[in-house]
Amino acid sequence: MELFSARVCPYAHRTRLVLLEKGLPFEDIEIDFKNKSKRFLAVSPYGRVPALVHDGQALYESAIINEYLDEVFPMPALMPKSPALRARVRIWIDFLDHQFLDNYYDLLKNRDQGRHPALFAKALEQLRFIETAGLGELAGTGPYWLGATPTLADFAYYPFFERLPVWTHYRSLALPDDCPRLKAWVAAMAARPSVQRIANAAGYYIENYRDYAGDVLAA
Ligand SMILES: N[C@@H](CCC(=O)N[C@@H](CS)C(=O)NCC(=O)O)C(=O)O
Image (tube, rainbow, N blue to C red; front, side, top):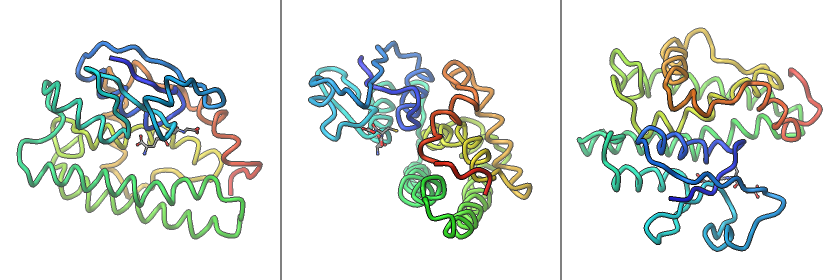
């Protein structure tokens, strides 16, 4: 299996975690975004990582690759058996990809400092929504999104929380004290061997996200 990836990319991080959780060997091909090879562009028509080649198939889009991996390599299962719970996993990944991340990255990248307070407030509101409507409704005694064992939701979200120190450094955004489940979830995820194997220190992300954040320090 070949994975076209980039160490800095949270989406590629999702797929690397799923491959490690399943104990699947893969060739990790680091893509230089400034110098994309013809082969990479043939495999990944949007020119984005991650892209996976397996069994003659070229696949892209992290959430879709991860579902594919869970179907083709079912153990350990990273989706619940119940269709209703599978739908919940997809709903929360959809919330991340189509709501949370839009605002989260806008807060970091937006050059108009006047907009930062509203983007910051929205990020806090969404973190509290995850705490109550996500983990609060689904996790039971936790520590993972759906309880005792991790699912694709956990691996979809975690890379963006490993990078939270970037938002704390440049925008003063941290997990609020009234989100104890979210804090316990981050700690449980950070302790997993798969996570530890490819974790980067906060300083690595802070340096690599500097261009996104611009010169604006601690709003
Ligand atoms: N929706 C995609 C997003 C992937 C994505 O945006 N990857 C970025 C890096 S984090 C990328 O490859 N960018 C290419 C570029 O900057 O040229 C997924 O979930 O796989």
